[in-house]
Image (cartoon, helix red, strand yellow):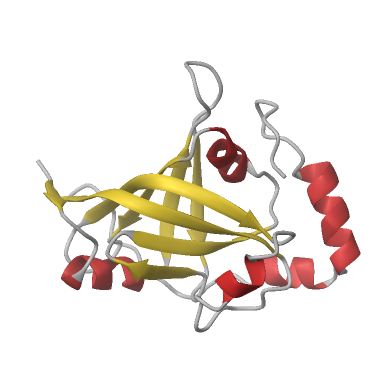
Length: 183
């Protein structure tokens, strides 16, 4: 049985900030539709903004389920696993909001990220108000060695102009796999 904590602070915050990868889970409203789980990574793209607030930079990708689901109902869970050192899993449950690159407040949100990688292809900042922080053992999580971040996402989008990215969102990220609108 895991432990529920009143906030994300101290050693839990240090653990979360040290992980090179985390997972995001969302689902559409109702009993239909697909539950989505996405891995996220790249140093400098995730920040803890307070004991009940986190955010990450969401880059253009093959899907946009997280943004569609957040628009639909706001529910979100983030999971961080220890792949080295002592076993641990930390889950952050809460409500999320996507602020797209086209939103007037987007630029101000970028200031929350002290050392982001290239932000050219960021399509949104995802902010989460955390209402439940818990941990569990992680005994079955394998031990793995982190070598480096992949640079393919950044290099593939570096060839696209701002106009190309607008077209990408309009064609490849217009709707979720269940047909929910994204932007």
